[in-house]
Length: 114
Image (cartoon, rainbow, N blue to C red):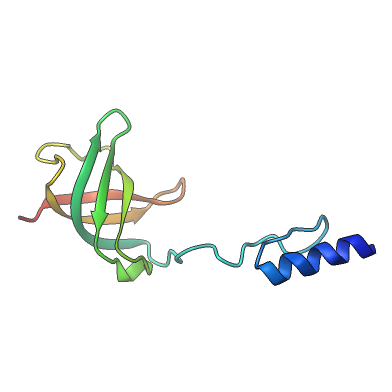
């Protein structure tokens, strides 16, 4: 590495920026977010939005300890066998997530929990 490259690396390190130098092994970010650790997990939350065309629900959910996730709002795909019946904004739900072959999680079971 030349003098300029060394200076850039020091600045990136001091400021906490991720810097990937061609040919280096620093390809992973230090802060990749919460770890996904389980194949299945159960959550509770409130439906915020329904997108039938994309087969998605946006849910504000409580913390999901099995996935090391804090409470947050996320969009999840519904498994093909599930119906949107009874699922509208404001509905309180309990749901089971399973790991999707494409990555991420899909809702495989859901029920109203009012």
